[in-house]
Amino acid sequence: MESKTGPILIGLAYLGLVVFIMLFCADQTSSFDDYSKYWGLFGTLIGVTTGAIPTFFFKAQADQAGKKADAATERANKESSKAQLFAGAVEPHVTAQIKADNPTLFM
Image (cartoon, rainbow, N blue to C red; front, side, top):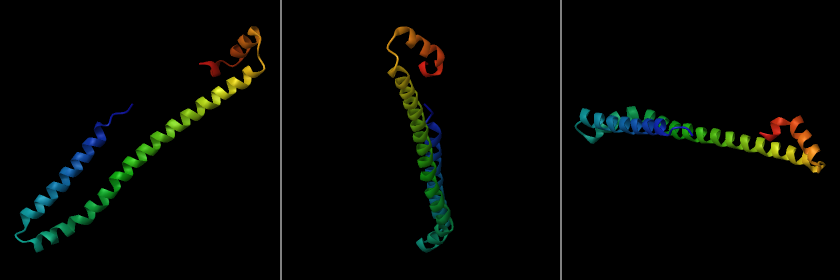
């Protein structure tokens, strides 16, 4: 299982950056009108970044789900192949021969 620390730190760093920009804009101005001008400079960049962060996390989750689905499909195919091989084999020596001929299916 992969660590969740990296994404959490990135999210916290981003929130810290937004707060820093807000405080910086407030420190540089003396009126709300001036603050709005400063914020307008940074607002678009913050909006784009805010939209990109969820995209990154959703893609990571989709990739992880895809890997799980691929592994489940592989296991199902393996079990299906086993069932097909055993369908005609009822004698113990035939079963042993099937296992010897197809070792990858019985790992």
